[in-house]
Image (cartoon, rainbow, N blue to C red; front, side):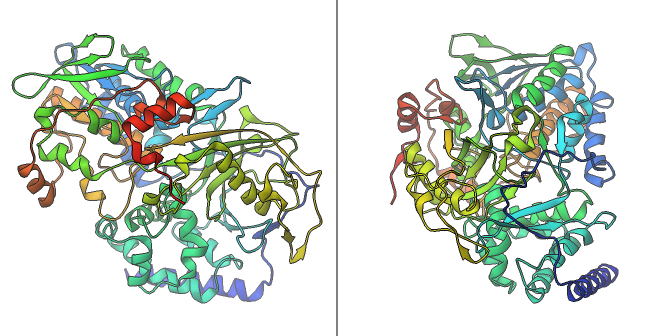
Length: 619
């Protein structure tokens, strides 16, 4: 501990000296229409030389050796849901010699990373997804599938739009050769645009227990919001405005006054402990073809099966409460040795059988719900001067964005931009005062165009069709003339996800269930289940892997992670509860199955029938 403190002090002194001797560091970029950025990919960083990656590798290898089931012990496993977690579970079950069969309700795989083509052939994605070096199980999966070349790695830095300086950006630049956690600390200290040196030094001490005590300290902060944690430990208010707002909205689409500090600390702990943990990559194309398809190929090559357009109707139980069969909507009874639910938590709650409804394990699901989020695709008639990276907007309405025509090979266009943005927070549970899920597409785009005119003041046209772009603009302290010939919006797509990843508000982490359930032949996966990577792609992959471990270990009589402690308030609620019949999962659109889609009258009607509160107008 003394060595760590000394090293941190040394890092701070070094950075202070650099700050004192250099008046201007290359951390801000001024918008310049003539200097369009072109796509540039960087060499894959060393993500393998970390403890988490070695742990991920050990678990992958366990399926092929210790947990491998020969013919007498081979199990037929029905996996309900073909999102990343369900596909991950099936992939590792197949690796262990079992026969997984995936049943996906929709006509497309991927769940929260699903994508589809519109009438013009353009890909519409459920969300803007970024791959981090600190995603050990995802990185290991890419290795196992032989698709590492599909990741487009970007330069190791974080890019922030300057809220008070429209059109300018600033960065946290990670100096090559500096090990973690000092590279992160140095990147922050060397930035002269966001916080004063004093504010930066005030921020460090409250975060030291995270590095020293690890996960125990992190989990203990779950009852505190980000703002509560800041106030408790005397962190400067500006760290919220400058850093935590953008982090909170990027991690869980939620404002810092609503987000559990455990989420932020978990992410920071991973990034601070791995040299290349914060380096980011984009997938080189659409997720169904470039990620899901190789997973399906791996599953089917080893004897498994993956079916789409197979929605579940209900679970049929035996007298002892175990699963007898999964009944599909077409009447097919799927009989297997083991069953795994890879359903989103909000969908799962609608199909829990009456006999299970008072069991504490399932009762704790009442404490979890998905967070709403909106993903936007906006095509412009000109190429914007942009950044070949993910950008943190620090806007009241927008979370992160990227020009996919610059960052992604499949969407590349040298003449026109396609900006993909995360619109958040978009509901009260996330800290917003407007329910944007209930708003028309046109209102969402109008609000977004106003924000983009601020982010790109020298490039977005003053367009009377979007009044927000007509406001006076400033750049570098001076007022700009009108810009009638700038970039104009030519097309857009609004993808609403009424229930996305679970809402990581304070006090929820303890209610996330283990993958092992009290039902002998039934397990859970999904990023809402208990694992240390929370609601993320990495969390989904790991949860599926852990569920496969539970099933595989049971098949061969080996050990696997056991039951998670259930909270006393849940035990009391379960004891007092009356059995409840499942309401079932009704509807035919992506929304009915916990996904996201562009809204029309049918989608809106189904959402109103199943989750009416999402359409309650506010402000």
